[in-house]
Amino acid sequence: MNKRNTGNKYEDMSCEYLEDNGLEIIERNFKCKIGEIDIIARDDKYTVFVEVKYRGSDQYGGALRAVDHRKQKKICKVSDYYRIIHKLDEYTPFRYDVLAVEGEGELLKFKWIKNAFDYTSGRRYI
Image (cartoon, helix red, strand yellow):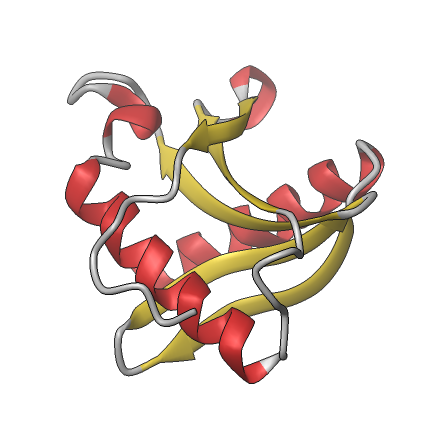
């Protein structure tokens, strides 16, 4: 299975997991020239930008470690763009979650980190 197919498989499972835990999925794989956000969801009053990371093992630091400062900054920039085109003002609450999917088969685990990181400034569009 190639990386894209693997990614889609675990994003599908991640959406199910998030829905089972009360989130409403709004959009998947939101793309713009800046980058991509895996899942955009609603959790009560929050718009939630979710980064999904899959790793078969934690041999190289695991899935959570893959969402470094550089990746966080890119996600924040993409979320700025999303909020502009969907007319979400500065009073609309939002957060950044990371869903780490690790292991395989029976040993598959989900680690959902709500509010995993704060808005990382760069050029703010709103």
